[in-house]
Image: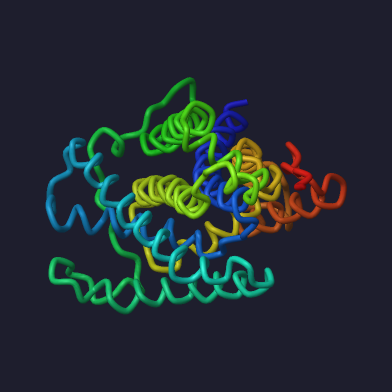
Length: 315
């Protein structure tokens, strides 16, 4: 029973990370019907933005009061990159065939990876030659350190931060979407952008807000990842982004709460598969296999996802 509880905690932690990134995929898709495959790199840039903020202002300092400022730096880096991406790369292709923005997203993904790899080490406040190797991430007091032991279950402090971040972000996103004018505008644009424009809604602004919201959650996830694994690198966004996209599809692409459920489900399945599938097909090397096997099963038997994609008949 202790093993089950331990893997459940591990799965919730991993799933919370996937969910934070997956919401960015599904928010953007719900507004502009675009799969932003560069979103994993927004997550990676958030982690490097937090690290750069720490190196610039707090190098050597590990007090917990530095964490909010690191989060601000991470969010600024991710949101700035996402907004520029939308304005320069995606907006000119908004009415193009869907294959064009998809290929563009893959190109942006590679571009951002190489940009961080080649130029990060050249900034004057960093001591790393480049980001090709794993770069140490600062370990902040209170949110990192000795783990808690509750009834034989080990709970890392960084796990509590990750799960707590998902809960707070999910609550904040619900309030934003359902209780603010901009959030209601996002709902209107997701249903029918042409009618929303006729009703006086600035569709371009709403799309930028959607990219910014997704980037904010991805930046928080990037900080959580750095705190958990103690290092970051320029390739960290590729697999995390792929898993988050899987989580979004698993829950129902276009459904925000489906992305959260899909991320948590994916994380729990991976953790349970590592522990409880015996023999040749078990263990850590097989966790990705079982994660994508779950995706295939869901797409075969419930192609709209666990919670069902939002499908709207547009006039």
